[in-house]
Length: 336
Figure 1 (cartoon, one colour):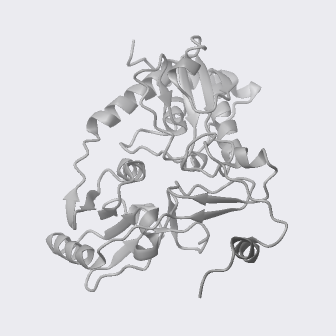
Figure 2 (cartoon, rainbow, N blue to C red):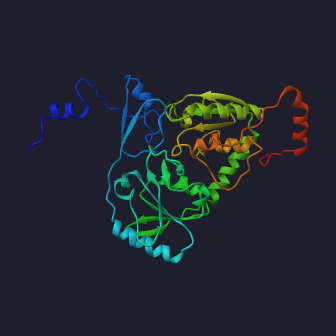
Figure 3 (cartoon, one colour):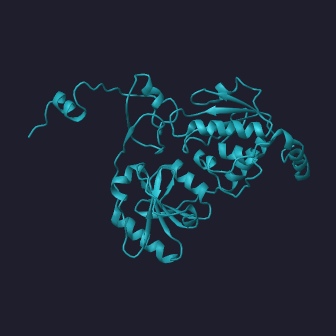
């Protein structure tokens, strides 16, 4: 039978009297739900199409519609079986881009226990691990930090987030019906990021770049960065510049370092062309909070920073003793 006329089909899907708007250019990252643009038309809900970082929204309810791509699951199963025979001790974790969720969320192989990172924002069951928009049937991240990770897709930002978080794991990418090692040398990259941490320690004036106004708990991390910076005797200024670029930030040469609050897939910016370095809230926390030590891992999700131990507030009566303890501990710049 022929499909119904467009007007009838529209009424059956969303109901009569519903106004629809198409949002184009995004306010911040294209992977995030653009609540700011939706508020310009007083929207009550947002439908997000295409690639996404799976970051929960702050105010408006959202529906994610993933692009669908095909995957040869039989060849994937054979490749996983061959790779698992070489290393039977490590757990096998399957990650994939959101385009393959319709095929791989319930994927399994006989003989190899798989832990699948499902793209699900609504699964709040207890005893499950949430990481970068994925839900794992694991109680803690330590269970997966030394595992054999199979990644299906081309989303480099999503893959790199897990590589930075699990540097001790072996990562393989499913390309051309075979598993290829993810030959990404993160040693020099982490050395560069640690150099930026040392630069943040020396900074006196810190610019807080607000790179999101619609993700969950973004106001909490803004206040956390402010508190952390002031506790370390730094002046913190807040900047709303939309998508940061060299020309915008060059207008503020007095700033020593910028801290970008954004979603995990847009928080890491190569700041070689910028006049000042741009760091993540996690790196800024490493620089200012002496209770946190560098472990070789890099967290790009600011929710991990919110779960860390805060800097204790010093009362006026305890200020002298606090200053004495700081003098005993000592600190020196590795830059100058």
